[in-house]
Image (cartoon, rainbow, N blue to C red):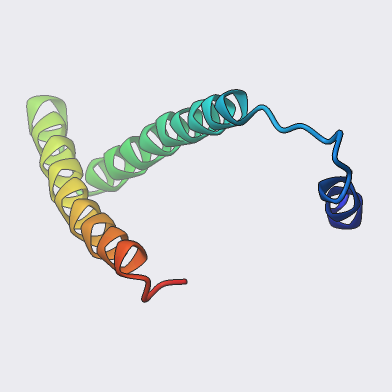
Length: 91
């Protein structure tokens, strides 16, 4: 189904969208993408730290520290973006 098909269907009074199912599928896809991205990011940080010569506990601590720092940064970005969306300045 392409955009024109969807646009045509929206004018059809019999066209029905199951909003809860759509939102649940969207959330599931979002979570799955998040899990995959988290795994990729962690692996990339591990590789970078291994190149620096870190091993064992040193490596684990460096990875956890980097992930915590990135999570704080992402949280700040998310907060700013959500404020923009709610205030209508990002529409």
